[in-house]
Image (cartoon, rainbow, N blue to C red; front, top):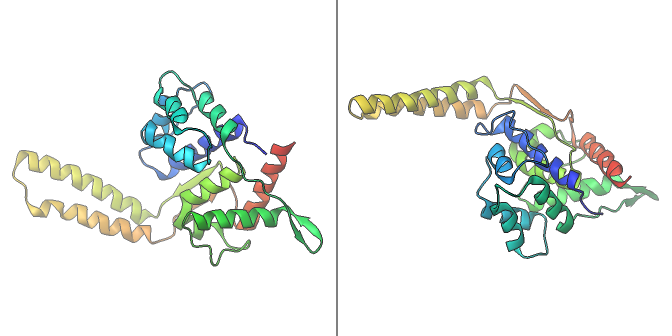
Length: 244
């Protein structure tokens, strides 16, 4: 089973939607499609430089072609398009073939998907010791969010493409105090002399931010999935649609 161009584009869009909610640098509304230039895609998602990006995707998709081929596409960022990139990845990427597992004499695709996902998450450094189909997604996501999104959408592109996130109010208050304190420090330092008390608002903001970061977010929605069982069924549906 191979990826399609649409699969790869869906992965990129899902990653962008994820970044909108969790990366303050990424701006909402900078959408891209097949006709977008490589530069527009990289700029919208605030990605690393083309050479580094080529290495990441070359390794992530286990591409058995010279790295220079992918580098040439990404370096020509003003003339090459997202379509060029998606076509290259879909043509050369190695996609995992998930075969059903026999359970009680019946083929079980969901068990195979869960086993594959768990194994991939473990290989990426996530602690999956206590991970079960009944496990809630939110606690795991708060620890390993980007890894989970990447692996889910690599196995079944587009499974998680909608995100809603609102951090705890302490996190938001702390972040605002840090920003205000930083710019106030620069302004006062520019007019008068530097004094160590100028960094006190920044330190206070960091403390409040870290306090809020340890608390549960006020809102977290990951495609409507509550636990891994629901997520696995969603992945199975995506795989079924892709095979028809």
